[in-house]
Length: 214
Image (cartoon, rainbow, N blue to C red):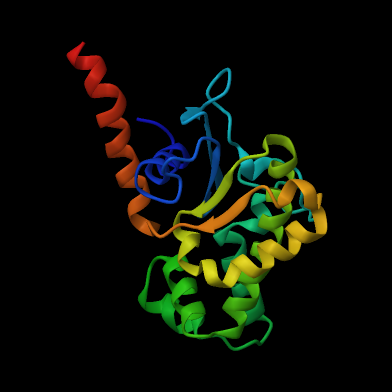
């Protein structure tokens, strides 16, 4: 159908915080950091379909190798995978976290991290805050280039939106021109795990069915 981030963006446009908003950026915070771009109410894919590779903007000062094979990508510091790796590193260095208990009974590490954070685990909260700050740094770049009405944090990461949102705002305050930043609302999605399926279904209904009938 389409990539996961664009499906999630369509879900927000049809059912979430992007309803009736002309220019919206939807960040899919998951293992990576995807981006769905909605311009004039339509998904923007770029000349060859690769618009929205937010994960691979070179904003990281770390030398960590990204999944794309490059170094310096935002993904290595602003994704759930980055928070998981940092939490596991802290545990290996002697820090206590209930994540180490949850991950033994939950094969999905993201679920284990989110559960730990919701129960107040300090290590999980701290590492989620770090990715929130880096995400805010990336969002500052988007604000200056695209000047959207709204940016929506969606995907799995939206489940801990109350934890990452303050750090996102700190980075926006630090890296964005205030006159531009204040024009854009930053909101946390309420669709969570259902966003991708809802968006895929809506894309079928809105585009493919009409094409088949006609």
